[in-house]
Amino acid sequence: MEEPVFTSLNLFAALVLIVLNGFFVAAEFALVRVRESRIVQLEQEGSNRAGVVHGVLRDLDTYLSVCQIGITIASLALGWVGEPAVSALIAPGLEALGITNESIVELIAVVLGFAVITYAHLVFGEQAPKYFSIQRAEATALWISRPLRIFMLLFRPLVWLVNASTNFILRPWGIRLGEEMEAHSEEELRIMISSSTSSGVLDPQEREYLNNVFDFGDTVAREIMVPRPDVEALPCDAPLEELVERAAFGRYTRYPVYEDDLDHVMGAVHVKDLFRAAKED
Image 1: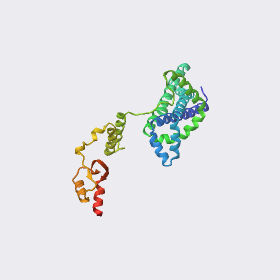
Image 2: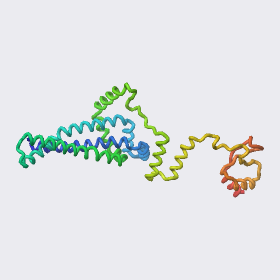
Image 3: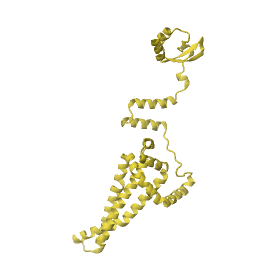
Image 4: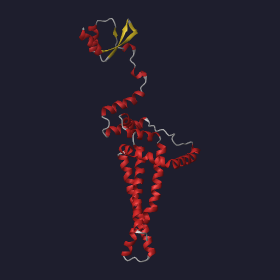
């Protein structure tokens, strides 16, 4: 049977390891989830923490390796110190229930201790921090960035070894860490715009503007060109009153201005400039 003081220390260590595991899980999901454009915006507004996060995002592969190493170490250490401590707490209760066979007591205590530690690790060290960081990615990234840089310094040799080993394994497939580029197709961007509109980030008019940008890229010149006989233009030597009258009853906001004929277009005039000139005249 373990000494009470030793058991208490192990339980405290288990609690610390669960918190550490949760920290690395939250950090990993926050860094993957957070929008770099938003972080850059905060940095430009003067946020020092956003500047730290931006630095982390520029070396994302390294910091994700730090998170993975932290999660692995914390999980293994938790099983090493946590299960014996919980088993030591359960064993006296089993003996009080009348189970006197020491082997049976030890077996049941180990099984229950493993179940309790697994439950605590899964709920408090994995699921809760994961979903919290997904829902609060920006706030989480701002909070974890500085501590994560400290862990990066501590784990640097392991990070180098892990990344070098990973690159060696992936090399036959032509894949290297840090070479991936996140890009979205036009359809994916349209879906993102639609989702942003549904969530209230964009209003319908902004959605229409953005979708028109994509449509404009698919537009060819002949679709917007006007046949020469149908061109509505203004002669440069016409009286101002005549120009204002033609513009007032016209369908456009701008008109080409020509000298002699349409082969000699001098520029374009906006109808508001014509009205302003007429008012001043």
